[in-house]
Amino acid sequence: MARQNTTEFLAAFAVGTVLGIGATLLLKPPPQTAKERLMRELKPYRRKMRKSAGQVSRGLRRGRAATAEVADDAIDAGRELIAEFRDEVRRIVAEAKDDLAGALEERRKSERRTDERRTGERRRGRLRFMRNTGEE
Image (cartoon, rainbow, N blue to C red; front, top):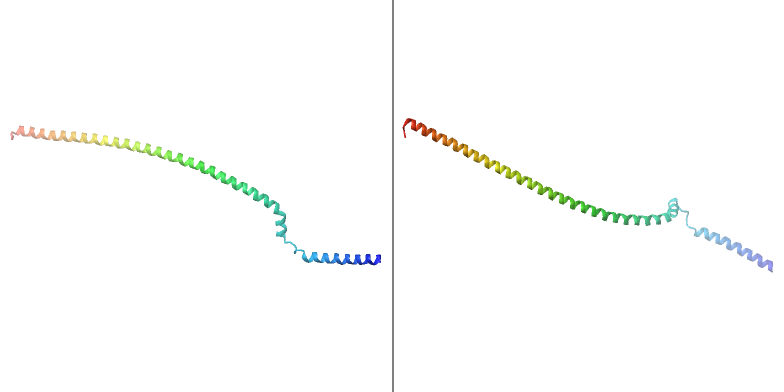
């Protein structure tokens, strides 16, 4: 009986093994495609890349903030320079206006004097002419 029990045990073991292998083969997922295999192999690297991408994005945000500060400073400096330039241009234009006004005034005075001289000469000439002719 021991032999029969051993034989039955071995037969049951063999049947169980075959059924287990069959079930394993039936339940096994279909063979992976190259893409799936590659994705599975790259999974640890994807995690590392996400982590480093987070670090890079934080660094970019900080850099952007620093760049914004520098840009604001540059804009302020530019505005100050433009204001100084405008003031200087206003001063130069005002001086030029004053110089032109002075030159025009001098020109008018000299023209008046010239006109007065000519008028005076004409009057004198007439007077002389009249005196000489005795028509007065």
